[in-house]
Length: 489
Image (cartoon, rainbow, N blue to C red):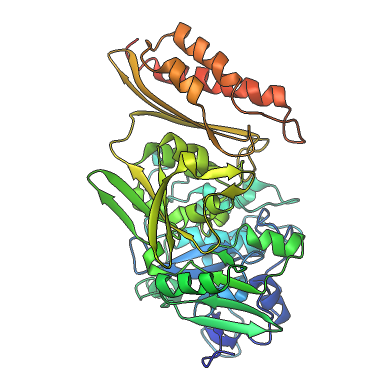
């Protein structure tokens, strides 16, 4: 056992993690302590009934309140961190006086945003995270609202894309979201944003012959992995958490990477952008702020905000899934991964990284330290994700495009594909069919025919092989239709 007991702060009270098992989720930990506002719905991170707030390093302020799925993350991963549940949002200013509803809770109540109430606490926590987002800009005129998904108060409904309601209907929930104002000066959670977030702590939590370990440096972590090649590495636990919950998988040793400073850097250099493998997708999105248009197009389509608040590029690539959303985009960007072990580093082009279904060149004692995107970027880009649901769904097929078109000629073409083979792939024949050719309907149709034959798509419950092939060709035609007005032909 570690010398410093593992503890987590819940609604302002520091609480020992023991005697919870290392695989115990935040959801189960909270409910066992009577905080039953946090619900289990799907146990896969798809419904949001379990969402809670976590204090994380901020982008524009020292601390951001971030909503995450409590059903996926082991509570040991929150050692030394702060959690706020739906119960902790209400304010108790005077002893013996019932707590006053939080502004988000108040709006949900008065606007009919709850019927059975099962999903309501999760909605409230996700809504509170958006309520406290520092760069949420309130507008004075309703006409300033960008679209139906962004309120006049600056509220982005995409913050609720990971929360499902089965009985209330979403209109009153949207009305509540668009009615909340700005946090007041005496709001304790708003004031908390001005202070530093909890510093990462070293964790060595062991019970019943299993352990959850977080080292303080990358070097220590890599030495541990050399000693324990059987260890499971996690960051946001958005993939491993599903394995634990649905397939009852257990690991003798889980090693956390999410707080390692060496994996949380983002650097823009003259010839490349280097993105730390443990930065969450939300952090990357906000730090890049649209400077990589292809990534900016990917992020809103990647699962939900709740998932993106925990998921990382390193994790998405590390699983080796052929239907991960980021690999096609990164392949089109000609990205590479930096693999690190106890002896040093090596850089591998992403096009050479995947070797088979959920397999790669990464050894058990190696970690993905960073993803490198070369500069300059191609000016014509697109990411097309075909899925059954608009948000929070797995791709049937995904295609990413990055083209250089000068004087009406395709000088360079890079196409990344997912969902059509055992691994994410580059569409090399289709790229060759475009390069050096005029950007015309004839060229695009011919290249689309080539693209339809890429990979080895299979038929399953998401889509047939023929449908997947058809969607590949259609994606290129869609790109042409979108760009012909801006690009000379």
